[in-house]
Length: 289
Ligand SMILES: C[S@@+](CC[C@H](N)C(=O)[O-])C[C@H]1O[C@@H](n2cnc3c(N)ncnc32)[C@H](O)[C@@H]1O
Image (tube, rainbow, N blue to C red; front, side, top):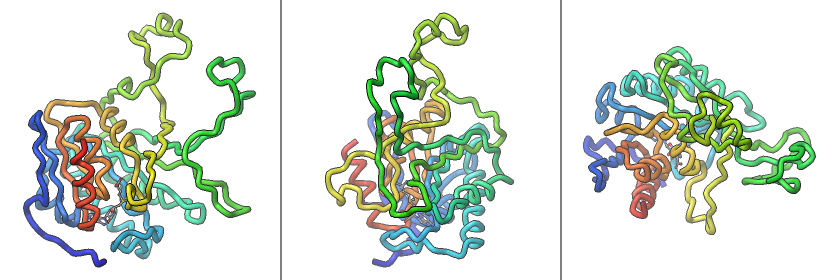
């Protein structure tokens, strides 16, 4: 299948939800889309994962550009995101590496460095093993545990890659976050009394987020080679803080994980994707929210 270069000025699909929020899906290149369809300073949160330039087998998009061209392109994408993002907005950029190409995530973060402040680096943990003996007397862990999605690699040089990055960029490094919206209950409840700030049974989760892939039964349920779980954008949007009439954007929609998270949270969304098959799948997924 070939990727078209659609240019329509109106959304391919607009869904208006009961609470008045709208989900706008464009079958369109994101650079054009951000220029033609998104107002300056109108977006609260961007949660996105660009192509990693690692030869991933997308339907039609060629994921192997010369590295300098790839980074130049993402710099342009970053500049436009900055234009449409509100001053207190958040850009959550998910990037992973490959054992043989361990710098690409940081190379991409580095090209955004001139335009944004890196306010937080979150580690998306896909799989983790905890030995009982390292946990001491902690009562809820009764044995060694190994949880999450573990895809072994055949190599005697490289460790299996069990995490990706979520770079949290803001315009000035001082966006106020709703940390407890993704907080975790205190293990030791006496901390609730001891810490003055702790007025509820929740503490900051920190920057290691264990998020397993959504469980699927059949390959066709995840017909895209590089999705993130819906919980990932959901947590990012919650961390930024839910606000009245807020708008979330994903310039690289894929099959719409950020759109689905936005619909679940009842906030408006705008997304761009050049591959019509992925656009249609995103719309089908939104039908069931
Ligand atoms: C890493 S995937 C995003 C997956 C998405 N986060 C999800 O969970 O479904 C990147 C997507 O960007 C799309 N893409 C590549 N170049 C694009 C462009 N110029 N404008 C819009 N989308 C593009 C690809 O077709 C691919 O689906």
